[in-house]
Length: 179
Image 1 (cartoon, rainbow, N blue to C red):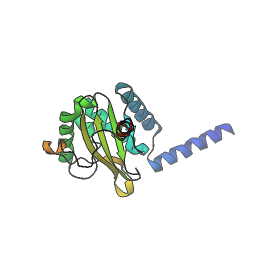
Image 2 (image 1 turned 180 degrees about the vertical axis):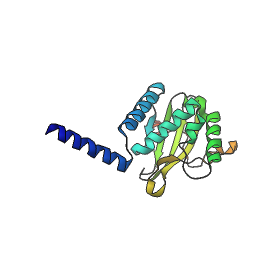
Image 3 (image 1 turned 90 degrees about the vertical axis):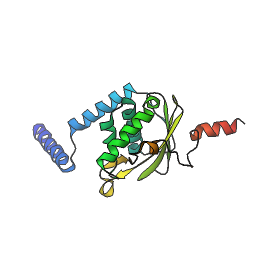
C-alpha cells in the first residue's frame, strides 16, 4: 500500500513538473548557483520595496557587472531592443561600473514592484550612481523579471536622470534629521 502511494505521488510530481516546466534538479542547481554567487560577493544594501523577483534580478545584475561577465549580464535583458543592444549595453556597464560593483552597493527601489520598478544603484567604492529599470517581460510577465538594456552608446551609460537623488533615501533622511 505504501509503495503504491509513493509511486502515485512520484507520478503526480512528474506530471506536474512536465505541465509546469519545473525540475527538482534545475531548482536545486539554480539555488546552489545563487548561494555560491551570494558567498562570493558583498551583500546588496536595499532601500525601498522590491518584489522578490526584482530584488533577485538587481542582485544578479550587480554580480554580473562585478564579475565582468557580459554574456550573463546581457542574458538578464528584457525584450526591449535587440541582442546587439543588450550585449553592447552589458559591455558598457561593465567597463563603467565594474570596480564599483566589486565593493558595497545600495539599490534604492522606486515604485510598487508589481510589474516594473526604477532602481538607483549607488556604488560606494567609486561614488558612482546608475539608474536602471526592471520589469516583468513576455506575455503577461511569463518571462519573469528582466532588465531594460538600451544603452549601446557609451555616453548613455553615464547619463543620470534629474530625479535621481545624490544619496540613497535612508542616508538623505539621516542627514536631514542630523541638521
